[in-house]
Length: 369
Image (cartoon, rainbow, N blue to C red; front, side):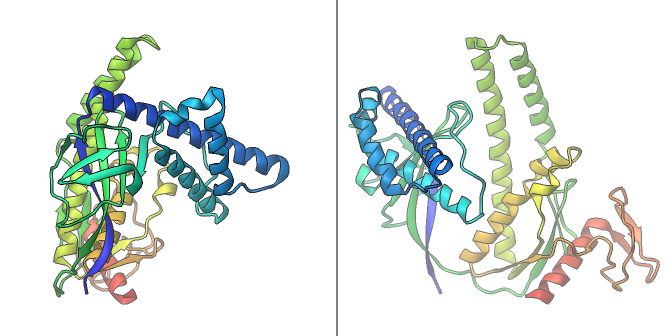
């Protein structure tokens, strides 16, 4: 049965000088309101043990706009400022529910520059998007069309460290499940290969990764030689950000292609329930684990399987997938990471370590499902 889901479509756009200045002011005001509201909430909780609600923060925002030193907050659209307070409210709700850490202040240099507009703060007509306080629509590069008849409910504008502008349009879309298939697959996430399937196939990582890493290292060395605070250092940091963005874009593109293919071809997908947060605490493989993007792979499989009527099974992280013979089920006590191929002493079967682990993950996933 088809389901209605909220889906975001992200596009690049090229703002005019006036639009860029307006958005830059909005980003700064959003960050200021978020930080000031967080400061007030923290002070109230520390001194009086009292929780400040969203309604109180919204009333405080009105008073801030009336003060001479913060009167500039009234020069930008009020909707992104209210949305910043709602995001802070959600962050505190997650903290008190023990789902997240205590909210932190937004940094001008490190935090993501973004502003969220709801329906009252933008106009979408005839394929053109116009934001509040702007006279002209955004020059969006429509790399793919929006769903037929879709009406945006939220628009988020952002600018990344590489200087690229993006607009994310949230719409409701009707998604039909894919036709059922007979195939199932087990996925073993790895470092030498992005993923190893129970069918014996190994999906390789990006072939351009080493070249990108060398380019990134050269760009970072250039930054290190520049004087702090100089314009040349700012230009060098921008070049580093562009290299980072290229690496991230390529990795995300590969993950989307791999996960879409797995969801289309298989009815049941079994993966390991890995705790990436704990695994990256080991400094030796931390960068390789981060580059593999296991968390993103799992997240994409989760929402795509839910959309298209597939079953994703997460096998317990303590399941000994590498130590278990997938042919006869014999358990072996030790299996160091340097052993990539081994022979089962019980049945004589020769195993590739990763393929054997993927087959065991599939068997455990089918047993759980």
